[in-house]
Image 1: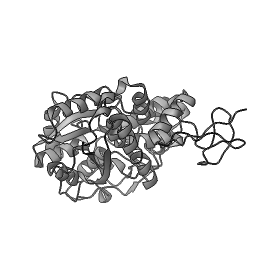
Image 2: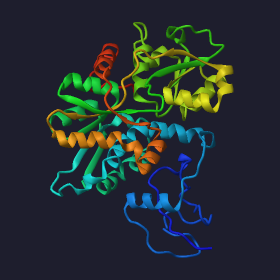
Image 3: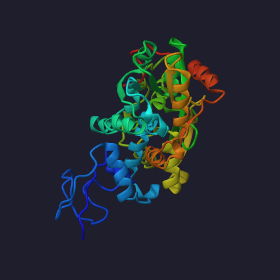
Image 4: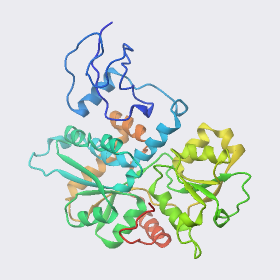
Length: 381
């Protein structure tokens, strides 16, 4: 049996969509994780760049066809948590091919991503998300690109306004806060999921007598690890009152399960009174455990108004019209590119879409419900 070159994949192997790093799909032989070859034979050196490795892997190691039920809950929960964080990478690979012919004199495209996309994400996984960005950017556009994901909402907004960044990636409500301070920040495209919905849900056991959120006072809440930022500010807003201004005081205890799916399992098993989850997690759980949900769980409350979709934004006047059009068109066509489509599916992103006509209206509505916080208090710890 022929040996084959091992192309290290920069994304988590537990995604359920890629071969395990330590096993070769073709020969099924075990090998050391990063030795470059299967045991029992040598082979020519493979592609060196991360993007080239990915392209080679796609051609020699077809992606296994697996349903969501084949993947462990933790893997999908972590992918959900990383999906929007990967939006900037989607930006890189989705640009049109002819952009690679741009002049070498073009300055690197600087992109700032708000760090709240990485809530509870281990540092090594954060590196996995950001590491391949420069290689992908250069391979697909001919331009150097740099992704920074260490700053808060207002820090990214400040840098956009000061022309230190070309693009910024925000959650919808964060962009509303930033645009209020800097009206010249404009949305380029929005990032959408399969459900076209960004909401927070409080899920309780069907036998729970609670009729409103206030009935959960003194009970236990599960706020899973990697909970989306809009769910966190929802908790900050709705689980406080004059008597208990802090959610930690409102509840008898706040637990952090490993995933939203574990949290819903715990509610079904009466180990905790309530859990806060997002749309993607809720719908996925209903899909993989319909009997458990229908028999044991119910939604006590859904966030209103709906949160605006995450957005990639720019400062008006900082980029010329032609470049903006090229960026926008490339992003919106990402789902038509086979390679990009695989990545979008992996990240559980439906794609990038034009800014909706009522997007500004949704920003105003969310600002009314969730006023701009102090810069140092953008989410609960």
